[in-house]
Length: 207
Image (cartoon, rainbow, N blue to C red; front, side):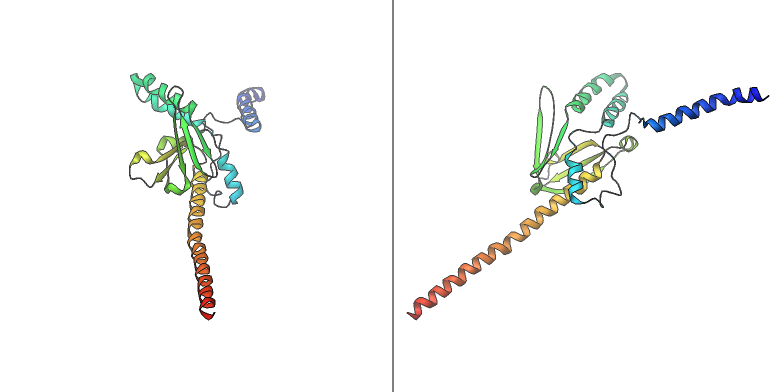
């Protein structure tokens, strides 16, 4: 009986050892993103850490590959026609965040590039459909001063979408603060010139 029990329990122990080794080695699901999701901690990050995290993002998360494949398979017979352009876009898509603004582009044969400065940004929106939420990625839509949807910039397939949103809001606030400070400074200079002219005129009248 003991031998039978040991033999019956062997597969369970082997599975447990294999599962434990999986966890120890740290193997990840193919849907794991290269950029960690930052939900509750992005607001507590210091500005320098947030800037470094976002500026390190130059490519979409690997989960966007699987998103493209799954969406293409939904087209059934037309899957190859849908999959090829989506995969071309995935492999050529790039992002850049710097001091001046945000840039993105994609394409091998026909390249398309878009750049947007922080001064032109009006609002930031984060969106996820059910498949994106399951894969752990999202889309950041940057709305500009133009009313047309074509003027918006979409950062798609990123895992740290909330970090990007917080980063862009900080940059937008920084631009607004600079613009608010400039008018008082220029007014003070004009008032100084006015006072100097008045003093000069008073001296000339006195002579």
